[in-house]
Length: 129
Image (cartoon, rainbow, N blue to C red):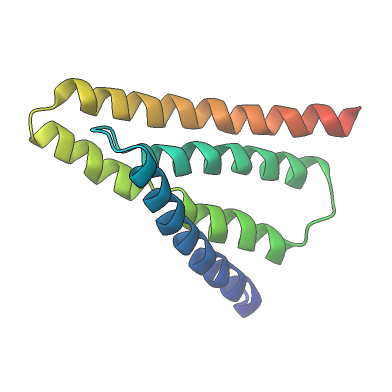
């Protein structure tokens, strides 16, 4: 891996981590609830954007390797946060909130897959038109 790619991923990761903290804080503040909607929100939006980007990467040649690395591995890798999702789910389970934990796990897992697919197919269909 070149130093340019490493720099692209690292700088994208910085931006993604700051965005995650910012949006997670806003969502959690506006929607206080037992389910961590801040993490769910960044995972769903990030997954949707990842679907869009991967479709562009596959069906278009406008992005360089460094831009792809910056956006996907860097920004979105840090924005979407399955480590936070995992510990939040564990803490819900550990505190006896089984139904909330299962809801959180289901919403994050299935919602992220659906959002990634939705973003992917929107771009795939629009580029074929």
